[in-house]
Length: 339
Image (cartoon, rainbow, N blue to C red; front, side):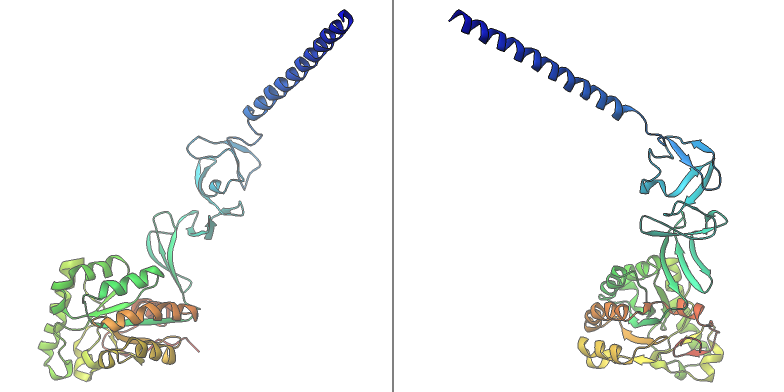
């Protein structure tokens, strides 16, 4: 019995020794691992320039611990200079740089300039850092959707649809209707839509004297100026009625249309959509009316339908800039691509 107890005690002592050794090993590995995690990697706090083999120690505000992190692209401070690093890791000095799925326009190593830029027959809208917020490409199909007789209680609903798809249109307004819908005009201007002149109270210009023609346009322009600080550049004559007297009097390009949806007469969203689908082609100017509830409903289908066909939806000013321009007193029905 004494021998048995002695054996048990010996066995327990051996087990304790073994456990203590294993514990020491585990503790040592844990300490080694913690030390390893606390040791800076070889490129921590360092940026590698694309045009030099030298290393520049980065500041906390402008660098990341790993140059492979996507956030280390875009605008960066390298060698004391603000440069744009593309997603391929190269410095972009001229052209378009990409970062995190977004595009930036770079010129001479700097943002190309805030606002609208016309470059190589493309129109770019840029934020302060060169971010391209919208682009219109001159070599791609485009359509100008236009709306007459607004603003109305449906106008802002139409704006919402275009904004959802980052597309634009032109609104030819009647000055007499602005007072009840001022916010629609302010939104059109601030959100990059084009405001055109459709006279003060929808008078047929061919029936007016030159003096009255100018008064109809000036009244509307004054209202727009008071709201947004600019006057209209383009005229849509009521009914599309133009003669030599009108052309010689107005100091704006005259914009008619090539696709007439006749939405004002049938007041049917389905018919408006079908006409657009049937008749629209590259360079078309499409006539609709934003005072119609059915048109506001049709726009929900028209915009994605045309985008799906490969069209850019643009303003009259945008399509004219990319397709030959316009002249005051001249009438335009469409802006087809050059043959």
